[in-house]
Length: 388
Image 1 (cartoon, rainbow, N blue to C red):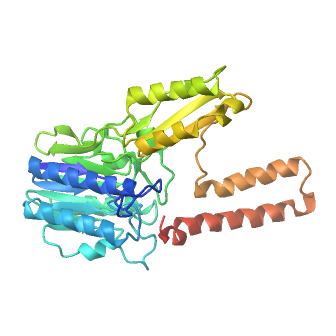
Image 2: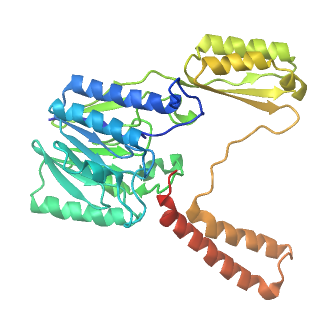
């Protein structure tokens, strides 16, 4: 049996504010086009099933357009006789039991099986069982659902099984995206006699176990992905062979920085034009850093030249780093669960300086830490239901 493994389509994602003549966001349209191209490629490959390992949608409350795009392409796969298995991910799963999943609209669709109820579900497709553990509300829930899967497998005396999950394995935790509901998956989930483990959430294609892979996303979303090859995976469940199938050309460029030390504005413009011309930026997403740049040269850059570059590219970011200030260093936003610890550290530092009277120090620390813990919990549950 051969399957296609894909994930992280993020239908409905839009950015940059550029629109076509019908008023549609160009970035959003590019994602729909890439999804359709992936489906066309899958139909040409004619696998026995398709597995989507989470984050079909970018928002938990997708608009009509991404819902329609998914329905259109599911119908194409079903018409081609290709069964589909989908799980919800942290982007498209409601963060409370009170909210309705967008996947409820697709329940009962012939040839399509969707796990989105925060619990393990098993679907039989061909001669394999697909054990699906979708997004769960709490990190601790994954272990319980995994245990249920193991019990069911024991009752069935093992067999030909595929595990489908969405989250970040421990080995890749330093590459976490710090997005809403991002959960860590224990290394123990990757062990056992499963035929294959299909993972979603990490946007790069990566083998994380003998029989476990992230398919990565078909699209580029962050400049940290600019060097990635984007596509899907064709998996032979009998031999264990995994073939990477490219879908998208590299349309995101994180260009090497230009050293502008001692350069006048005209010389900086020439360097920018040369780099962009050499790499080709037409309809691409581009980032270019200008280091050691003088403020005078930056103020004198031709607006016309910059405007022409922006018109040619889908999006271009020109980031100046001035010679009279430290280089810009990107920092990751603080995770909600780290708030109580960071607050405690802050109060202790303030107390050491005498900024907080000793008489109220413990009261401030206790009240503030409790408040931060409540905020952290609220962000992890209720507030996560809002559109991102």
